[in-house]
Length: 451
Image 1 (spheres, rainbow, N blue to C red):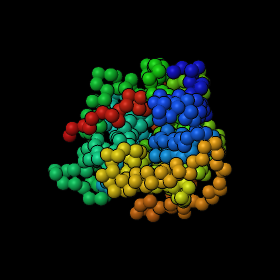
Image 2: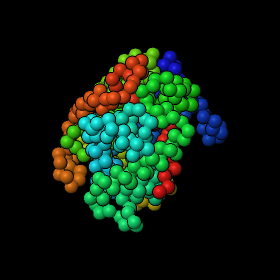
Image 3: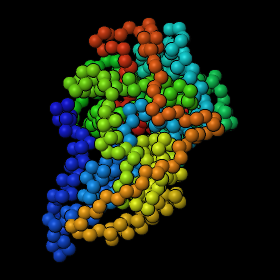
Image 4: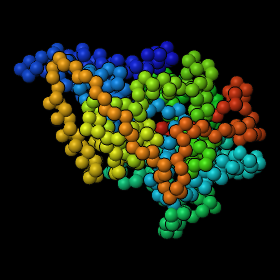
């Protein structure tokens, strides 16, 4: 997975691969059933199905090659490319236990203030409290706290809480009693999260030096240069650096944040120069405007394209059910929004224990049965005007009654020279931007900490 081979790893190429396969595949059907050489999309109704990135690929393919696939099913399809994707953490903040979100916000705000305005002694005391005394850079410490929140994406209607709620219990249970909706307050939250994080980091890093495990200022670290073909994280980052962004950062100023504001797109874009120095000698923004212009993003209008999204999905804001551009469902482009589901929950039949998931699965079967009957071999359907109506903008999401920030809001300006003041850095590995995170090590897949 060198930059040389990855140059053909693009959205456009992925789309062309799907189209080529549909038009050229030979399927090993028994001759009595059908000729396997005669099953192309001009003779049979092909249906394209995907979830998350591949859900977006369903939409993008039908936009760029109308008529090849007769119908499409997009689950949690992240159709809108977004660089400053602070909205990833919004569904988590909105639907996690209120006592937990209240205390997480307090801790994050305290850490940001301390790392920005505190003395070196105060900064070092705080990173030690969270079990990271040997992580050199303070923004690395703050960024590591995102790992607990990423566990939300693994939740399902059948998961029973998992690691995410184990984390919240560690913060909000005291002597067998749960905190009220306002949490226990900063002092308890700092102590409880500090103890939890200390055990988590020890479990994650083991004998690995903490800077090698959690720091990212050293561009020579091995995981930046692991180019084996099965390195899926590296393949995904190539997409992020080039075409979609999706950098999961702190919220803009003036809006509640459960993630440090020391993490901005600059933090992640800098890492592109580490992962792919030949392609990115300097940090640059992903070409999200080009991607959305080419594939329509939130504004997709395609015949027989069935969307399913979920309010609790952290990828909700990149789907057609975004608070910023919530599209109106139509009979030709249905858009279903689950209340019980999470990320791609509708793709598995075992999750139909939730009534709304069962209902959308049954509706999909009924809808696609009807759409398949509309297929006429050799006839390419004319593109219809499906309208551009969108639902009213969701202006508020919680009791705060605060107007939602603009879709074009800019990230906070972070002076990393101030944040990391007193830190000794190598000029060759630090040009003033922030490091990456522990994501390549799949930290969110660790078992929950026992407290």
